[in-house]
Image (cartoon, rainbow, N blue to C red; front, top):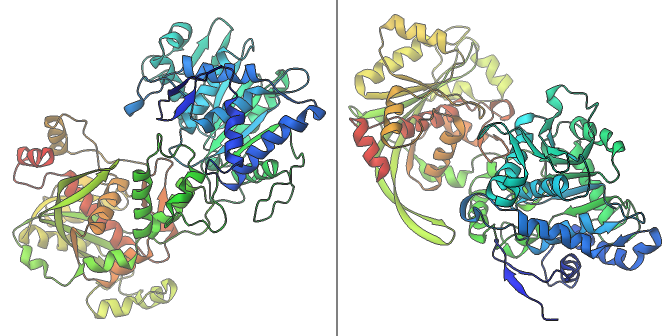
Length: 630
C-alpha cells in the first residue's frame, strides 16, 4: 500500500497512513542516528525498541490501533492557538507522535495503560504546555474513562491556570470540541471544562488552595513546570486519588532546573535511570536495558558531555526536538548571542533552552559590554535639557543612589527576526549617578562589605555626609539642584522609604513629577496621567513602570552601545556585582539580596532609563506619540 503524507502545522512532513507506526519509526531513526538526539532520548528510543521485542515476557504489548487513535485525536480534533499557528490542526511532529504513541499504545496484559507516570523535560519553546493540554482533553473525552477527572496541577493556582488556558483555547478553536464541551465562566474567566457525554471534566488545581485532596478521583494529572515546585504536595495530592482509577496517568512537563535538592531533580534522575535501564548511570549515559520501572515513561532532553551550545549549533536539536519547526534557529542564535554578552543571562539560557542543570549564579554584566560605554564627561554640558531620574532610596546605613538619563539623539540599529533583517531607529543616551552613604559608619561598613568606601569618597564617587543614618536632605537638595539646571521629566521611585524622602522634598518646597517604579519583578507601578494620555492616543493600554522592562532596555542600550555612562567606581562596582532573578516567562530583574556587593547605583540607573522610555521626554505628549509610532 502506498503511504500518503502531508505537511504538519509545524512545517514537518508526517504520515497520514493510520496503519503506520510513527512512534516506532521515530525511535528507529533516533537509534540509527538519522535524527539528532541527546543521550537520554537515545536511551528512551532503545528502550521502546527493546520492549517491542522483549516486553511480552513481562506482560506488555504495544497496541498500535490505540496509539494511532490518540494520535488521530490530536490531528483531527485539536486546533492550535496563537501567532502563525492560530486555528491550524495540531499535526504532531515526529517526537510528539512518539510520546503520544507510547503513552497510549503501551498496555499491560489486562489491556490497561502501561505508563502511569511520565516525565518530559525539554527546552523552552518546544510546545510542552499545548501538548499536555491535548493529553488532558483526550483523557477527558476519548480515553474510555467514565467520569474522568482531569487536573492541571501546580503549587499555585495561577500557574495551574496557564496550562488550563491552553486547553480552553484549543476548545475555542475547534468547532467539534466547542460543540461537545461545556465551559463554566465567561470569556477569560473559564474555570471548568465539562464533557457531559461521559460525565467528565477538566479544572485547574493547586495545593495552595488549601485542599487536602480528599474526594479527588483524578484520571489524569498534568503537572506543569515541575522545576518550580517547592515540594511534592501538589503532585502527591493528585497521586493519592489514583487508587480509584483503572489506568491513571501523571504527566509531568518541565524545563531543567538549578536546585538539586528539589522534587524536579529527583524525578529527572529517576527518568534518566529508567531510560538507561540502570540504577547508577555513568557520565556516558550508556544504555544497559535492565528494567528499573515499567510504569514510568521517560523523555529527558539533554546535551552530550562535551557539547558546546554557545559555539556549536549542531547540538541544539538535542535539547529542542522541535527545532526548525515552531522553534527557529534564528531565535536560538539570538539567545546564544545574549548569553555570550551578558553573563547574568548565561545560566538561565543554558537551563531553559539547552536543558543544562545549572548551579551558581552568574554575574549580570560583563566588562566586555560595560567598558566601551564608560566615558568621562561633565553633566553640565546637558544643562537646560530634559532629564529622567531614578531614585533607589535606602534606610539608615545603606547606599542611596540617584540615576540621571538624558536623551542625546538617535541611531539606526539592525534587528534580525526569523531571518529577516530590518533597520529601526533607537534613542541614544548619556547617563550618570550620584550616591550617598552615612559618614559616621563608613570605616566599619567598608570592612563589613569589603568595599573601598573611603577611597570612593576621597575620589568624589561617593558622598558621605556626617551622621549614623542616611541624610535624605542631601538627596532632596540634589534634586533641587537638578530642578534648577535641567528640566526634570519625571523621577522614578520605589515605595520603600519614599514617604520620609517625600516629606523632605515638601519641606524644601520642591514640586517635581514623581512616578512609581517598583524594583522587583512582580509588580508594576501605576501609570501617570501623561502616560495614560499617551497610551490612549497611541491606541494601547497604559502600563506602569516595572524593573524587568527597565533592565531589558538598559541591556539593549549597553549591547548596542547607545548609552554613554559617566565613569564612577560606585556604578562600575554595582554593574559588575549584580545578579538577576527570573520568572518562568524570562522576565528578569536585579536581585539585591543575592548580589556580591551593593548594587543600588545599577538599580537607580535602570529605573532612570525606564522613566526615560515610558514618560514623554519631548515638549508635548503628541510629539512623544509621533516619535514612538515612527
